[in-house]
Length: 307
Image (cartoon, rainbow, N blue to C red; front, side, top):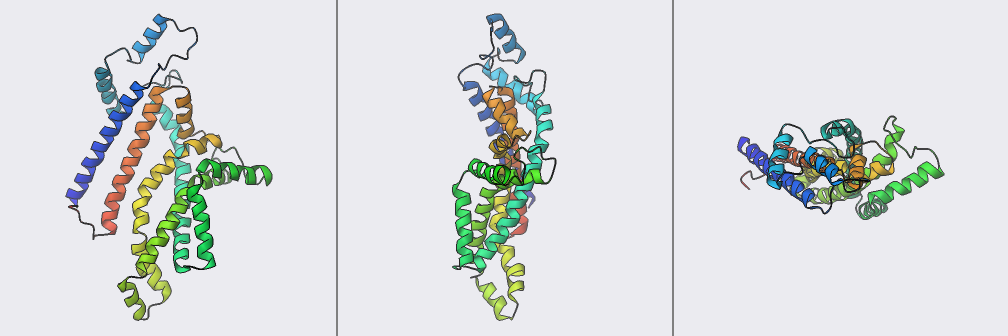
C-alpha cells in the first residue's frame, strides 16, 4: 500500500509540474500585451509596468522566478486589481466556489445514486424510462442552458427563488446548485444504473437470494457495495469539474466566487490572476484524483497495485 501511495503521489506531482509549465508558457505565447488596453500608454510607462511584473526578463528567467514564487505560495500581483495579490484574491473568493461546489456535489451524489439504483431495480418499466429520459436531457443540455431555464421558471415566472445569489441563505443555493449538479447527477444516475444491473446478475447475488435473504439486504448490503465503486471513482473528477464548471454558473447568478473572478480576469487580460487560478484549480483536480485512487484501493482490494 505504501508503495502504491508513493507511486501515485509521484505521478500527481509530475502531472502538476507539467500543468504548471504548460500554463506558464501558453499564457506567455498568447498574442498581445496585458497592458495594451491601457489608455495613453507611453513606451516609458509600458517599460515600467513590464519591469514591475518581471516581463522584461528572458522567458527562462521568468519561468524560474515564477516557479520559485509559486513554491512559496506567491502567485504575484493582479494586473487588473492593482495592489492585490493573487493568493489573497483566491483566499477571498474561493470559499464561495467551495460552498457551492460541495452543495452541488452532495446533491449529485445523493440523488444520482438513488435514481440509478431505482432505475436498475425498475428496469424496462415506466419509472426506468422516465428516469433515463431526464438524465439524457441532463447530459445533453449545457449547464448554462439549465441555469437560464431555471432562472426563467423559478425566478422570473414563479418568483419563488432568487436569481441573484450571494450564498447567504439556503434558498440562494438551490438554483445555482441545481444547474451545476444536473450534468454530474445525470451521469452518476446512468453510471449507477449500469453498474447495478451488472452486479445484480452476478453469481454471489443469486446465491444470497437463494439463501433466503430479503431483497433489501441483498441490494443494500451486497449489491450496492460493489455497484457504487464506479461512482466512487468518478467522485474525485466530479468534484473538481463542479468547482471548475462553476465559472459560467457563478457569472450567471452573480455569485462573487473564484469562477466569476476567473472569467473577469480573462476578459480583462489579467494574466497573473488567470495563471494563478488555473494552477490552483489544476492542483485541486490532481489532488482529488490522487485521493480517489487511494480511497478506491481501500474500497476494492482486488485492484492490482502493480498495474
